[in-house]
Length: 249
Image (cartoon, rainbow, N blue to C red):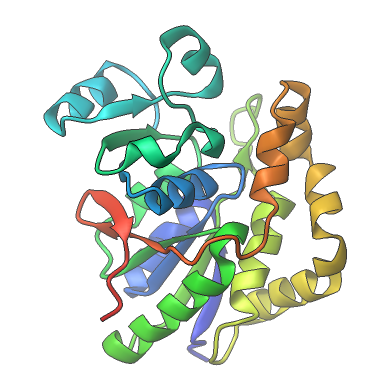
């Protein structure tokens, strides 16, 4: 059966969705998606760039007249914006940024050729679901929600380095639960996980492996911020190389 709503994991799942020509929603709560949503809420323009963050990435930023978004540790040395969503604010309107990350930016680049790629998280779960549904009506395409997950830093040869993250799974479920159409078993279970957990979602995410890593580095404020449901109505969409607010006209 060709389900209308699917769930996939990571860059490989993104490639599968891209090959099907699906509408794709990238979900990386901690914190690529949350940071892009926040930046676009403040009318910044984001150029996602696949890892690593190296001289090539910096050269790309120069071609786009853009500033680099650093990892949290690098931002302490270099100054400027970081992958923390709290580093963006009202002063970023109409400014260009290149954002490189191990998960969300990688998945976004893996699906860069598809007709419609949206960025979702808890902060805009309802808005991104509504936007995706409108694109279904316009394009007559199915939807795949991508839970980006994390990567094991010490995976041995031949080991899969994807580390599923419950923060992405629950946010994907929050989005899927609002989508209309036949759901794959994976999507149905994901939506069910959200419905079961929604009354305690902040506590679960704060105690997740990904959140603990941030909290141990002093970024608890980021975790609290990213756990907010439907804070914004903005929906970032990838237009060729950059993300800005989706035009649903």
